[in-house]
Amino acid sequence: MRVLTGIQPSGVLHLGNYFGSIRQMLRYQGENELFLFIANYHALTSLKDAQALRENTLDAAISFLSLGIDPDKSVFWLQSDVKEVLELYWILSAYTPMGLLERAHSYKDKVAKGISANHALFSYPVLMAADILLYDAEVVPVGKDQVQHVEITRDIAVKFNNDHKNALKIPTFKVDEKVAVVPGTDGAKMSKSYGNTINIFTTLKELKKQTGKIVTDSTPLEEPKEWENCNVYKLCELFMSDDELLELQERYKSGKEGYGHFKATLKDKIWDYFAPAREKREYYLAHKDEVRDILLEGAKKAKKIASAKMEEIREAVGVL
Ligand code: ADP
Ligand code: TRP
Image 1 (cartoon, rainbow, N blue to C red):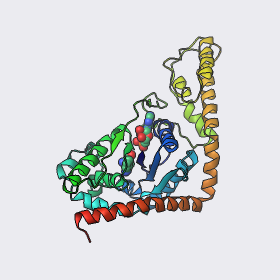
Image 2: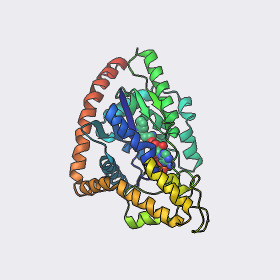
Image 3: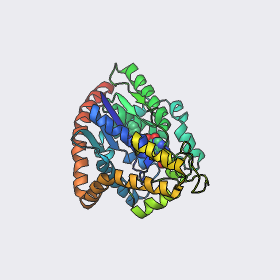
Image 4: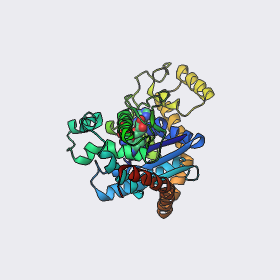
């Protein structure tokens, strides 16, 4: 099964990104044919600082490689290295009714937030459709906010296929309902827009600060504490085995320790959990040329499929 997804290079990764999305990708990598790319053309709709876009793009590649994306077990590339996607984007635009894009929540939400409406923002879903349809992707794992974009992709593909018999594979989306929402330091959904994140790649000092910010109740140190609804405990669940959690529950009940102790335990767990990834990241940061080469190698694999597909599509629509 061909699984494809794109990631926007949007800066610092946090625990929500890892447990809500990246870990699923790593599973797909073992069990399926994983196609994963960095959506830098999409990022251009919101990021106009060239240096920042360049840096974020490379940084996203470094982070994903460090966290376990293996270029030998997946196709991992940079969207802008396979230009065929832009050709397909244009062709698909001719099969995309305006109404379909006018109904897109993501566009409406961004405009409502005051982001100025440019054409790329409006036609964002068509480029996303091209990303997916160019590679005959079967399954597209996405967060809930991206479901409508995959539905739009399906609608465009059906319209195209009405004229050009089964030229395009109709993809399905997959939202992993099992994945719990990772709480942030204030207990709300962890998100960079809420300033409540605990970041994956950070210094020990910063990690201590971020875990220190986790909101708890004010039960005094010498009283037993409730672990059931505690934000510190909820985050510990992501990192601990059942036995370790039972032990932690005992510590909550004992009335001998305060939240500061549990936060310190959590901090150590997070630090150890990402130690191998941190080491790899250090390596790639010092070998950025190697990262660029990995992306170019991935693009070669992607391009092979993309150029064959484009030949079929040009033939179908009559572009010489
Ligand atoms: P942010 O909210 O910080 O801007 P993004 O929208 O860039 O995060 O999220 C990228 C991916 O990480 C999405 O697939 C999303 O579902 C997942 N994700 C982000 N935050 C969380 C969270 N708190 N819990 C679970 N998954 C999350
Ligand atoms: N729009 C997606 C996001 O913001 C990123 C993306 C671009 C994507 N192209 C894609 C996701 C194709 C899945 C398939 O998260």
